[in-house]
Image (cartoon, rainbow, N blue to C red):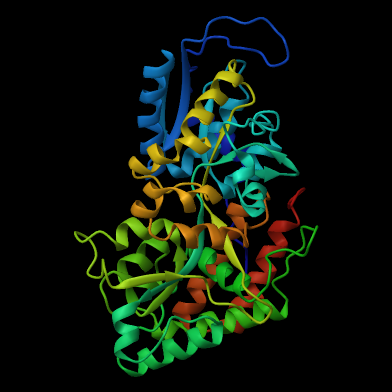
Length: 431
């Protein structure tokens, strides 16, 4: 079977150049950390993506202007355009964007292409408080040992439980994967949905890969760009995932995280493993039938302990910004240790700072904050490689197809291994 891949980065850039013309931002020259000439900075440009985090950054830009007089122009990018437009802008002689919001699967492509400035000399600022983060969250912001970004949100996968359904059937939130299967089976026997796993043809791989990591597996072999989907952990994860298919709502079979959450809030799904960032939907009585009938707990432990994947937005400074120090000043203002109350007030999921556990505003607005910090302390990110988006789409395709045609776990895993290895063979870095 031929492998359908995403367009290469070079092709994306060429296509983007033909499709639109970039407008060079009106950034003034700024303070040069290397001692060059400076002029007064009057404005910066920030690229954000539609999300609670992007909305919060837009409001924080207004706060920053009120404090400093520096205006921040906001450019909203569609999620699928973020990496392409930032990469294309990186080739301009002057900066199109100074500050950018991006997702972790985009990190390797941006950093390896030189589109992001190193923030190593900035994150040590006491006002920012980098040491307030668990080491795993710090690592999430690094590529090839260099911090090119800071966490904007932190969203580890955790276990979501419908407490009413579990209690009605004398079940408790699963602490292990075996208990998760037992709960799912018991709920299924009662005519309910025992699990809620996505098989989307574009994003389902994220949720199967979470299962892989729960079982202690990994997408790549340590220190290499070699697929590890031929491992015992991958076999166990594939069997688990397809065993849960008959216990999953039909509406979820072709869905990802949004569809999983929409099914869960209808009230007849007992449990799911999903990112913490969906909390605002589940707790919203205008959307959810279970706003007070759910509980979030640590993801179930696997054969060799507790693992989970961690996602979340990142924010960085572009390598060709004329005012990198001023761009950093905004990031420190918006995302520093003392800025968390305002970020939470604006409705954004915060980065997993340890000090959030002692912040009354966080405990009130985000009751799962202790869980957030605890899960993030052992959370892992998928390998940072420029071909990650291709891998996700390709594995999602075979996952969805195997669910639709009934070919099952073994057929899925064989194709997933073949496709992942074929794509990874083109990668120069997997960190």
